[in-house]
Image (cartoon, rainbow, N blue to C red; front, side, top):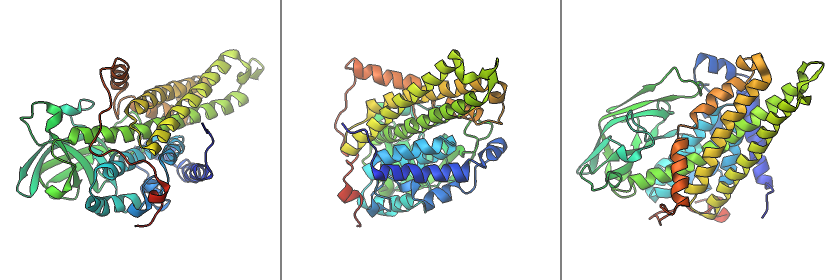
Length: 404
């Protein structure tokens, strides 16, 4: 077992950290207060190759591995969650789903511009009355000849108003014996007639990120834009969540680190009762728990990245990583506020923003309760991985880094 990061991994860390710390950190408080997206982040992430970091060169990506994706997400969210959210939906939910399930023609048409950042993608699965219960999706897609007629509404969709393409799961067979077997997944051009969308405001956290809704009214989707076969939508959505949850876990690890680093700085500077609060045992206990949780969360997501590199299914290991890291990040940010005292309760310091941002990750991409059920079902033998018609390809440097 080798726990050392390669030179390429360290280069990714350094590049993404420089971008987030030097370009975003100085302005994030302003945009978070205004509850507005930072206008340059997606463009700069595209220019730097971050949006296509783990995609093959032949499809417009940087040819790096899945561990690089996790490291990038940690560095992004250590500054602000909205940066990692962009990676989760654009790279995790959209691009990696296309890589796994798309035909060669679909990859050339849609994945290449997504990997280059020329187009922005998102995943549109959640609905007003359907979140973790994917089988309850009500958006419909009725086939008429060479097109599907798409109707319905998606809610809480990150980058809804910014994206060009969406991976959309809809019900194609309302009479299927199992609700989950009646779903299919499509690549939808969000500039199509019949698509309307907008932003949601008043969120507790991720205020500098774009979150919105998408409405489909008689949208004509060509048959060639269907991902996989009819009835595979549930499986495709679940594999998309495996990729998305990995990025969430890695990003939450960044919040733990940010809370830890901020707390260490403040504890060494702030004095009470004639000495730095870092010398008080109860403060040391909080710091120790953050440091421990950071190491655990980091090892968990790096394991998932390694498994993805090997082409292994990661549903269970991703569930462990996502649940632990998101809950630990909220706890770390909460303790960081306690260490900072009254200052932590204001937006003068970053820790209050990290707390607000961390709370959402225990809900989206599969709530903590859903992760608990997944883990229990595997442990009890009630659930096991079954072969898929198309598995996520293992990371092969010769393929990933070769020109078409």
